[in-house]
Length: 185
Figure (tube, helix red, strand yellow):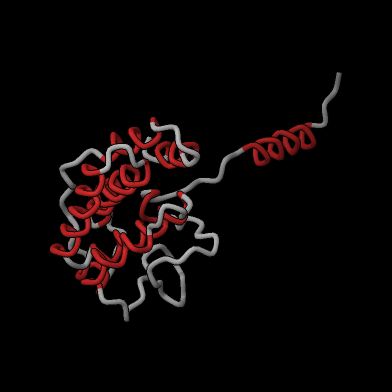
C-alpha cells in the first residue's frame, strides 16, 4: 500500500497540535492572571501587559487592611487567587508589609481551622511568596522592577499543606481549590 508521505505527515502534525496543551512559562501563582469574574480586587495597572503591572498609585502599606476585606466568603476561588497574586506582587516591594500580610493570613488560618477559605488563602499566599522569592533568581525582572523587588527569601510555612487541608474540608469550593493545588506540582 502506498502512502502520500506529505499528507500523512500533515495529518500527524495536525493531530499533535490539536491535542497539545499550551506551554505556560513562569511560576503559575505569580505569572498568570486568574479570572476575577467581575469581583473586586486590588487595583492593577491600566496597561495590563505582562504579569507585573501594579498600579503605581496604590499605597502598598494598605495591603494588610485591604486584602482581607476583599476576600469575602462569597468570593470565588479564582478571584481569591488573582487578588492574592496581585497582593504578592505589591508586597514584593516592601519586606515589612509582606511579612505583615502573611502573618495576617497565617493567624486567620490558625484561628479558623474549619474555614476552607482561611486555610486556602494562607496556603496560596505562602506558596505565591515562595514563587515570588525565586523571581529575582530567575531573572524575570529588569531595571527599576529589579531594584524594587525585595522578596528574595522563601517563607517558612508550608502552603501546600494548608491548601490540602482546605480541600479536605469538602466545601463547594473544594474542586476549584484542588485545581489550584495542582498548579504547585
